[in-house]
Length: 162
Image 1 (cartoon, rainbow, N blue to C red):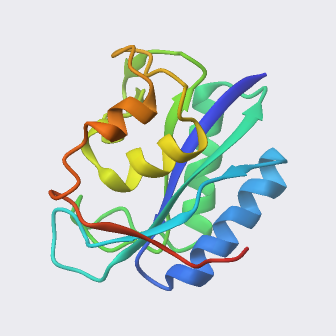
Image 2 (image 1 turned 180 degrees about the vertical axis):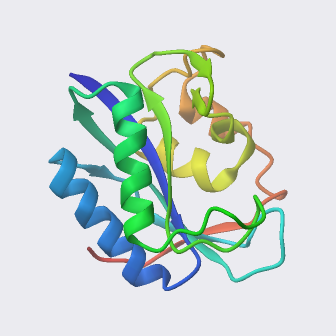
């Protein structure tokens, strides 16, 4: 079994879509480790604020199969893929990590580069996997978060129950 971490975000019907997306992840993958939910301003475009979190789970599926399952969940939530890259989302679920695998081929980018670029990915990942090490950088996520420029991307935890 591989330990997988995914980021989850929404800025359209965000409460409902986050709850429903997490429920589908539980139904498909079983027990989840969930970070707190964080609110952040849209990055790369003008739009409503996002809710974001990170989930971890174990799976026997390949990275490609996990990515297919995540894409199917997004599509069931009305995800539109023909718009601009940076735009509002009903549900966005990205495969961040698959054990300590390093894989950069096609549309699979593991570890995902957003981990170290976006506070809304790094903070929740550091919350639930602080001592886990980035497979390419070797630094643990707690240390990466400690050195992140937090003023560059405002982010705050929000009360949220599943």
